[in-house]
Length: 489
Image (cartoon, rainbow, N blue to C red; front, top):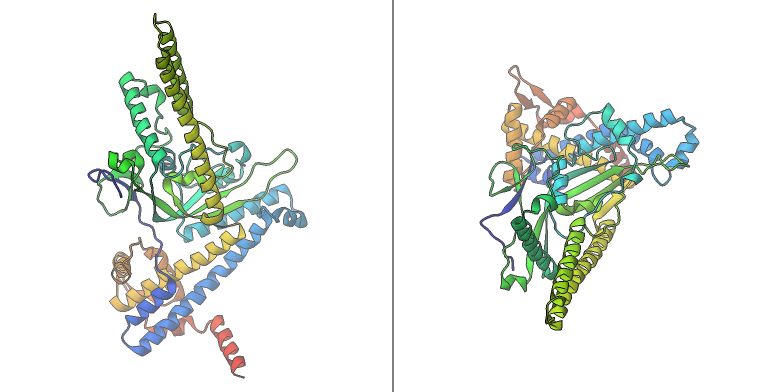
């Protein structure tokens, strides 16, 4: 049963992304079925194949360069490949910067975005399943590779750790967990009581965690936590224990917590060089369905968690208060042993509670790390790059096909109208939302030669049959014909 204050919903506002959230075969079949004339439908299906074959050929050489460069910086076999090349240190530096340039270009084409300081602050300030402070051991990470890249290729809104590692994210989802959360509920109650005491004693100014000074307040920022906000962005509700109103009933029953997730996360970093050997390997790790508040589980070279400074403060204050109470009881004319025993039991029980809560959180942390390795990590290294390359092609093909179909059906359109019509088509026919990237799609249609502009700048498409003639027979079609011919023989 879910229990939370519905009058004050915590909503995460996120910018809509340019990913077309439809499988390419479903998209093509559905759009083809919207064409009434059977001959036009056949021409459209042929055009879709030729568009895909051509776009794939455009990217093939770029992807080949990317894979060849990565073979030199693969953490497993890259060192051996570099030794065979007999390259100087300066030449290797140039090659690794070229690899990063290709990689960031592919990331952009695949609609991945660099995680911002605001999103990292969400991970640090909120709690979902991970209740331990996770920090990166920066001494184990290289600080030259990415720093050199961003100096040569400046980016806006880079996170504070961009010189050591970079995190890309794409897609938004939801993760729900239903459980009793007994210890977590007790922790939340104790935390509220502790915060109340600190406010009354005015110690909260010195002990409570201050907001990250790196985060700048910006009312127009793309990602922010709001309450009951309504605008054109994508809104995902967060249901956390910290914000729930507890009652006797929900303390003893199951509840459901909910956290927005990043559908895909890719982490890029290099380990620090040792005194003996310079490290050249570049790690590229790919994760899926990572809750925003638990984003720390994908961080590279994590330190082993320990009790937080606040836990130690609680622990020491409890001991001091207990000792003062015991000393005060002993100095009384008639010391009551039961009172002393009760005080010591309370102090010992609270200290034990802090310790066992930490142990439980450690077990949860180990569980999440194991899960991130076996369930949530999709791939790494070459496998991630191959996935990205295919993903770029799939997205580009879908964008071009949608734009071509809309121009074919709607006639002449301005770029702004075409963008709106494509988004409406995705919404009306598939029930999905996306921020359609019309500029890139139209550019490719013009490159294919199947879209033109009139004298006032409106775009229009040539006929289906003419479009197929312009693109012409592709190599893949010739191979298929040869294969069919040899099979028939």
